[in-house]
Length: 145
Image (cartoon, rainbow, N blue to C red; front, side, top):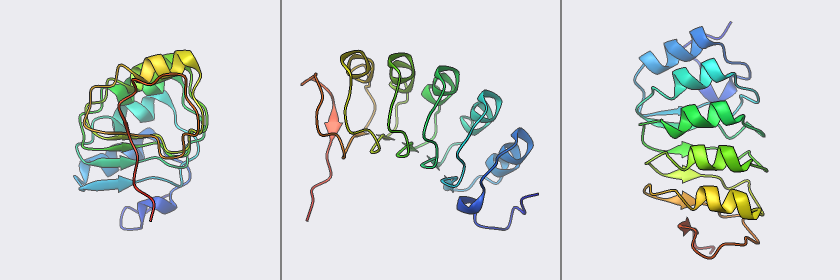
């Protein structure tokens, strides 16, 4: 079992109970980049956090979990481990109003781009995107030095 005084980025499996305990800590940011799978119930709990949430270890996300994160009222949401995204998940995530980082995506299908095109939040980061069919995406690119 995970000890709550340890670094959260070392967590690889996350139960609903542990997620609740972590959210109750009221940390400014919660780095759970070691987590590679997430249930919808756990996503629902994490979506109640009010800080920044880093889930960069996830390589896929269900539409139902994406819908929970679309309702996330915390600061920023980072899902940089995702390399693909369904159109439904993209549209659901577009409801998040804070910064949204999807830097693992390198290309977007038209329907996914249309879903993300509905994003009206602070900043949509798609730094590794090499091609996309839509020029109207609200993309933020970090300058390379």
